[in-house]
Image (cartoon, rainbow, N blue to C red):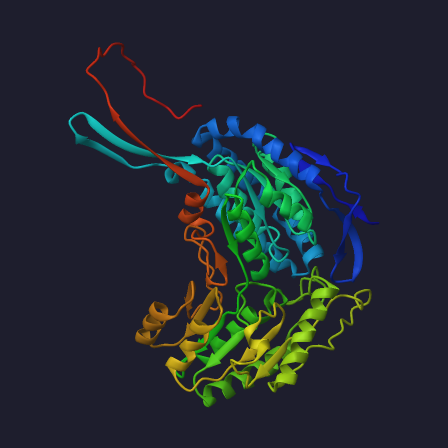
Length: 502
């Protein structure tokens, strides 16, 4: 049975009027399991109107009350975590445990948002001159839009709307049309948690919806995560329309492996960070940079048997470690990069192109095995581009300086890591490498929720990072008040302790 999804506007499921749909596949079977309605400008306008109508009341709701709604949403979404993970795995293809991690990382940002009363505090200077005080306050922006990718349909929406809503904004969320079920369910849970109708709206769509969001005069800010080409487009068009925009793009993360590194730890880390979620992560580690041939050879010898042992199969099979890619189109794209690497002269040690799932009923799924390249060089296009699949490339370096130069000179600057026992080398690498997020003996250096996420160079457009304090700053504007009061009559008295009741 094929499910037909809806939009979620002003607290209601809305079918939409465009008559256009996008097929939602089960990547494990290769079969269509649902249809996502693609919004026209009409649905976007309706969602923005609902958010605009909800904004005055929500922005004036006490920050303590807003925090309580976030606490309730956290409770409800945590209780629904397994259901959310099943929905996610069945539409995206990542295995169930990884899908639960997707949900959990989003909930950690919601936990941060529960502390919003602290982060909305301004600054105060008493007596800057005779009888003169100066103070500042943080105010919500208004209606904001969140445009999120297919690869983290739970985490990234919660990264964005959690903080935006806690700060007092109202939201129009445009998730990926490939896997819409989780974002729609999250909107239902937010309503159940006590957020008024219109505070969180979900509009499914393609470029038509994106352009309508970018051009809409009532949207104050846009947060985006996706490919670099589209991130640049969103940033350029959104800022031209006078909006505040943060747009996170692609990545090509490097793991530097020093001669003193623990090779067993390196191999464990590469198996998970290169092939987990079938490589469909902007913080995956698709490039290993061993310093010296001896280190490179040891890594390859450690990886080959581990790759052969990878359990690849249906996303809801608890025994599996890697599921399918999200779509047939993406499968073909990843395969084309493996073809390209061979043509460019890289040595294909392990070829995952012809992998087929042998489990009955899943033979037509979008599965691909893990691939491993050696002797990749910086001038190869397959190295320069983001592959976004289960492909690990080894680029050999002769020295620490040569190794550090690779991520520093790459056009992407999202994440990198170094594996070493040498504290001096690690400290110097973290200080000097031209990349936004660094791990030291940590393969996937995604910061915890109370720090901020953001890359450099073509991995990010805009000056403000996602979540953490930077997220609060993105979704608020500062008002500064300078005040002086004449001497007046002090009358009246209260005989009770103030409370935080609304």
